[in-house]
Image (cartoon, rainbow, N blue to C red; front, side):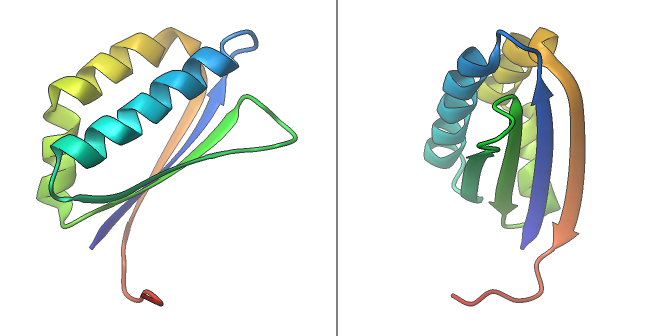
Length: 98
């Protein structure tokens, strides 16, 4: 499995709009991409503009398809001006409890 993590820092005043939009992005990814297995959205309770995503795909090709999808491109364009920092990590999943 292919794991993607994303840490977003969102500009003040845009936190709630980003939260709404990223939740829609998560739902779209899970509904429209059979190879997207997990799309968790987390928020720092002490820093309301800090969001962490944990995404799980069948493989790198599935993630590449995600990046080309219309719903991702729409999300990226919608939030681009709100993002002050974005850090992406990729991993190979080697063990899971379930």
